[in-house]
Length: 135
Image (cartoon, rainbow, N blue to C red; front, top):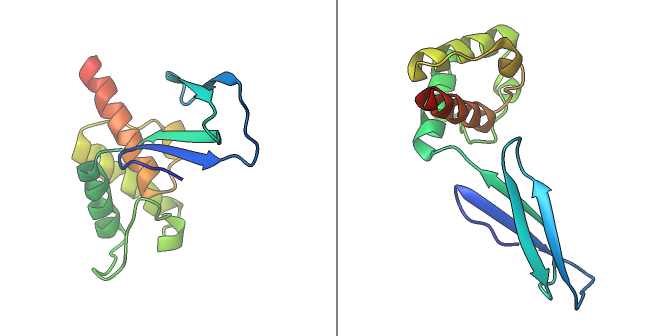
């Protein structure tokens, strides 16, 4: 498996190899397509993710730590689930409000209901900040 930090390309070796070239196109998000020509690569699947900037993730961690009154020794990673940290629905609303204030954005209720991890929050923030800058 190969991976790159921030932009991640994961390739898994296939037990089947082919001598033909296959063009694979896959929708990665609502706006991006990725095409990769496959020729004797030995790989059959891939995943590309565009992760939020490390400083955005760190700010989200700081806000989550503050809102949930977590002790410094509590490990927070991008994969940390709010529920696993002891957050209930009210805590999650307060986290989202803290994020809105810190980043000067507005998170729609529909979007906020889908935020369950630090990474999801950071990715949504980056998307909203970029959208705001383009407007």
